[in-house]
Structures are given as C-alpha cells and as structure tokens.
Image (tube, rainbow, N blue to C red):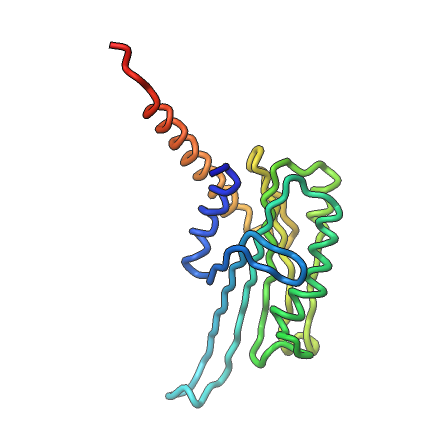
Length: 196
C-alpha cells in the first residue's frame, strides 16, 4: 500500500465515526476515491414531538479526490461538478429548493495530491468560493469547502470556508507518516538474517 492510500484509509477511519462512507463513488461523469455523507437534525418542541417549535437540518457531503498534480483545470472541473451535479443532486435532490427545515449544506472536496501546488495554484485555492442561498436564505444555503494536501510534505492549502480542515488533515498526515515508517522498519526487521 502506497502512502497516499494509507493516508486516505486513515482519513476515512476518522470520518466514519460521524459520516456514512462510500468508497469508489461516482457523481456525474467523475469517479471519486470515496464519498462521505453527514446529516444533523436539531429541533425544539413543547411537551411532545408533535408540537415542534423549530427544526433545522445541516448536511455535509465530502468527496475525496486523488491527483498526481493539481492544475487550474482541476479546480475548474470541481466548480463544474458543484454547479452541474453536487448542488442540484446532493443539496436540492433535483427540486427547485432544498427540503423544508434545511439550514446549511457543505460541499467539501478533499484533494490528495502527490506534488505541492505552486504559488499561483495556492492563490487560486484560497480564492475558490461557492455560496448559494435559497429563498433569501429562508431555506438555508450551500457552501463549498476545498482542501488540498500534498503527500510530498504534508502541506495543506484550503479556501476560506475549508480552513478548519487543516488541523485534521495535518494530524492524519503525521500519524500516517509514523505508521508507514513503523511498517517499513518492521518489514526490514523481518528480513534481517542472523550472521552467527
């Protein structure tokens, strides 16, 4: 197992506590390494559930992408996926507006790349933005989060909405690095033959 696959496996292990995970997921014409879905319902009611005062639903959809090198075209493709497939299918389910009590949906893209993005690409990542409100935000809004982690050095680049992902992605990188090093050392210990 290469380092990127080990990293994704550990990252998905962290997500599976709160998310439903699907590996080898397809959306539109694009295949993703994995997809994670989260739904939260909060409500306030009086005496019994039939007398609900308010109710809100929050969602997050995370798509994991493996790339050798990130390009400007990849970012443009992600924006196309958001507008053509992710937002209409995952947020609105083909309807004009999201379901009743919808508050917020995060469309998160985590890109595992082999090479560190250059400065212009890091700037493009920071400027990446998608935010759409429904019925003047009475039906909530959807927002895109983008995080790119380099398997070379563990550097994480995010857009403004995705900044809170940095800590998780960096922590998984350092833990995976330790695990992979220990496996390599254990394998060489098993291959060692005594001279005596």
